[in-house]
Image (cartoon, rainbow, N blue to C red; front, side, top):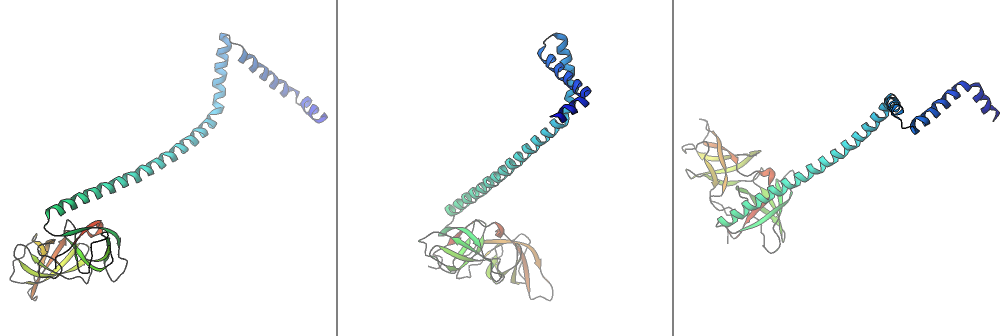
Length: 263
């Protein structure tokens, strides 16, 4: 206690100043006269400078919190938008499938792609068509754009489909304009080759390539692609037509199984 009293006594000038300021502020706050209000306003203006850094830090924290909230909302909206786009694309695809089913004379079963093959030896997808359809191997698979592949193994309601893009897949095709027959094999991406085209045959860029009908699996005149390049060299016995597929194999969602073709 003596130390405290001694400290106050040694610094009595400073304590007197602080007390004077303290009581002055009390008087200023309790007096509502015009002059006192002017003094109070100027005093607040002077002391407000000392609160600027604190207010700035507080505003900065508020802005950071609001920014984080906005980022979360943007992410949620982006995910929601992606989901809506997926539903939109799926709806458009299903509408196209319905139109295809109503306009084709083929007996077809709708199926949904559930997975893609992971084997390096086989380019394939798995489809689900539901129970009761009696799937079998070597059934043609198409979508609204054209040939997709064929079934190679089946269960009661699913099938493993070898895609046309598989390296070992071979398909008898023809140039629709001239009925010229050739054998299709895949190259890469959406590009394939048609071999065994006689050199005397007339082949043009843009010619449609369809199934030939010389197959125990695929009906005739199903669309495959179009000619984008012709290889015809003197040393070759046959021409080679380079084609671009109609089907986008990177975005397969729904397909059709052609049934009863061989029955």
